[in-house]
Length: 263
Length: 101
Image (cartoon, rainbow over all chains, first blue to last red; front, side, top):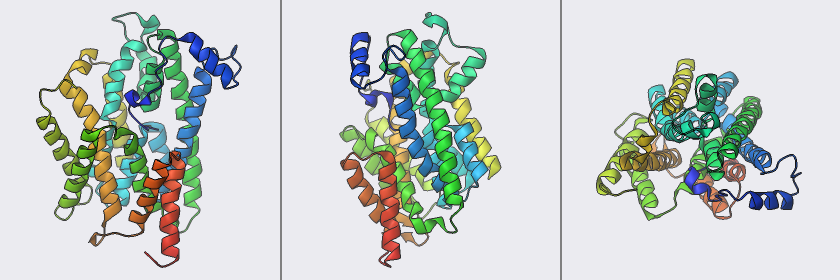
């Protein structure tokens, strides 16, 4: 989950109904039951994300959370990078406040996805109308990288876009939680999870999340500067804080250096 | 631990929910867009660096760094997420079992 920003998800299908149909046929899916390939694509995204959830469940238990706490993160927080960050900071001996703050900052982008999805998910997509009530609560919880990226893939077809969002949201939510449970229960049976190198799995998880975002030179520079700053601050700040401070300084510096640019 | 788990979950949900209430025009502000793109990169990189190279005794290159190096190779080979993570864990575990790290 949270494998990359929607823009990086490439494959923009647009309104080309025929293309989708041809692709669905090529992939061997029953076209009549799944005319635009939404169900099959949502399912395959869910399966990929569920496999990642297994590793999240395992490292969370290795970090010292119990199985119910690990599962609560996947049900309630439901945004992978933030969950990984939360247990990562805890595992490194950082304070709980630092863990909460790091997770929150990483989840801020979901708020921007929500800004966009609010109009896409409005009843019948009428301009100016927005999704409300219980549907809004559900939509908010499902607003993550994968569901937003899938919805954007089917724009400007409002109906397909909405169905893509909900199908992907459900698929990822169910399989992400199933994967979490499997990983957490598996790690809970081990007496010492560090024997299995799970402390190396945590940074590898961050690396895999970072990788698709390193799309140009400025992204690389930002990443390198942020990492070096965090490392330099580590001897003088309490565990967990260097990450927030290093990343914060790097982003403020980058914003100042690129001030006046459109994007 | 429970209060932190619930607080972090609450913040994550409220952040998503507020997005459904605010005007979409916010997205058109260049500052908002740029900051939103930069934050995950800076945070993930800082987390990655600290968790790879910082230990109880300060700066250290150990089995974790070897694991992450293997993860880089896995990513270059376009391996799926789970394979990337497992290859790092397995590398660290094997090095420790051999007494090399």
